[in-house]
Length: 225
Image 1 (cartoon, rainbow, N blue to C red):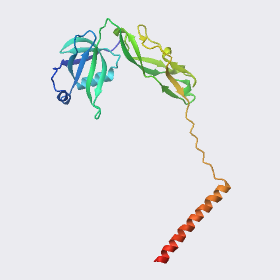
Image 2: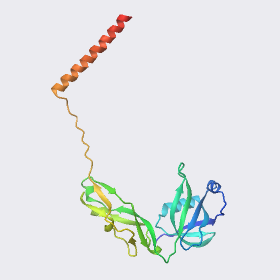
Image 3: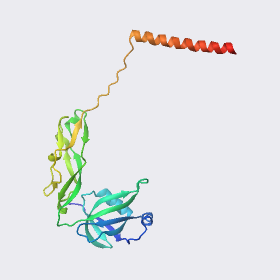
Image 4: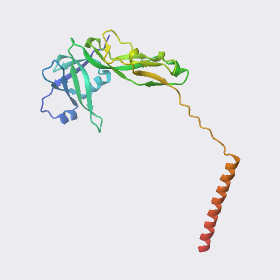
């Protein structure tokens, strides 16, 4: 059973001081959607927003409670952060029309065990971490599992066209782009090569010459004293 995620919000006046809201533990937000006549300005408890952001991605429906009453289903479309402190300062909520298809980004979760990693020391290369899909809101899933156990050799790849989507969900872009593959281990072998007899002789001569010059400079200094 899918977990029900709720988010409570209060109406925000257009002229409210945004900086004061943030200082007092509230996050300004806007609710928008194609069936809304105008955007709705709201404010939400910062801690509640953080909890929802942790448990809900862009493809997770959230039950919005506005001023104590059920408002409908929303999706988190964007969260904005302070570029210096990285504090959350704003979020955008998309109010969903449950009767119409929507597009959303679904995160890919890589599961399973690859023989190329287990037996040959390879590393998983994830070229794509999410895919854009189209479906009715009721068909949305929080993530899509990608089984990497099919990657048995370094030549095997998983492409977007290989992804197995649940019924009712379709890709917005059906391509042959690579989702994941296995990279060969790096061979970092450092060999200490002993110098040849000729090289050793040249090094010894150079050291002797350097020592001779140092001795001459020291003698010259002593004569000046």
